Image (cartoon, rainbow, N blue to C red; front, side):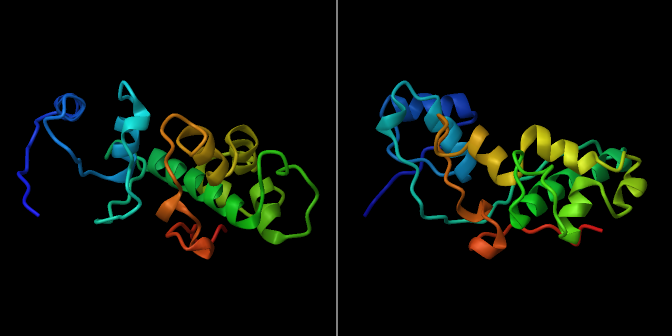
Length: 169
């Protein structure tokens, strides 16, 4: 099979070239491809293949000079991942539990909040307001959204993905 690589300088040029038929296939990280597909004039005219040809984990970015904010963002994401692994959702975060892990998420035990400078119920508030990682993923970029991004490697490690939270203590 012969092909000719066509390079574009911007995402807008890439989209234009694809829609105009000047290129037949695109390669990028899955989230960018799904986002681009959702903005096409006819999103159903393109399919993002399930074959992953590279590993490009994406994550949050903060300013280099603010370690306090870095730790808050890092542990907020970890709390959402931990909640999903423990089966805690925005609807169940306030349910009574004897699980030490769930009690830490609820702010009933543990002292992680002290090193972050946050209230004891900081992780409970995050989960109550935006949900666990899976809830947030599905609501914002999952299969029921215009982006229609499958979880893929964004699954928990116990479900075949690469997501896990470090010890939440």
